[in-house]
Image (cartoon, rainbow, N blue to C red; front, side, top):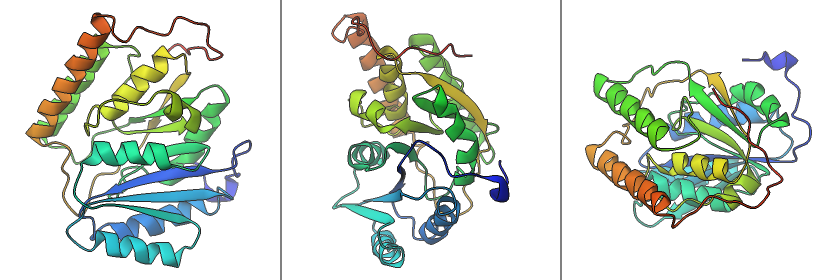
Length: 261
């Protein structure tokens, strides 16, 4: 992580959106947004924190609106009338983000946004910067196993063969406009965007970033029902490609691939 006193505001980009999907996060939302503001204000002249309140049954939506009034012009709040899931929230965030760059975080702050100091410079030679977790702190044996199996399947079935698909990614907005996913599954939506982006010729780079475990609230992404739906989406996507229904782009692209580890 770059020291704040040495950090320079990123050149060449006018704005960035940070997506914050939220479902029943009243314990975490204030801390997450205050930390995000502390990280973004010294680094970006124009930024948006986009909170997607996914039908929360607690005070998450109310607190989000309160925070938007506290930081006028910095926070946008979207509300779902009912819980649609993290995948749908991410997709809506991808579509509604106003920034030239887009990155997703969570209300338990697994990503320290000060680590954008490490990610941003890589955009000189990339269209997507994929954060790779240095560790899986706080993961149970069950989550470690399912995460490892998920990565192995994705690397076996698809290109690009990345070291991490489900932490966070920093995108140029045009990537998300071009590589719209069909899946709304919490676990598969980000990998699908990465796979489609690679096929379209967008350049991808990876970088090791610290992962910070949840300290409050309840994680939901490891539910067996989500894992099963992820597998269904993953294999359906693979079958469609195997049958040629979604052929890879063959026309020349102004983007070129970067070799991956």
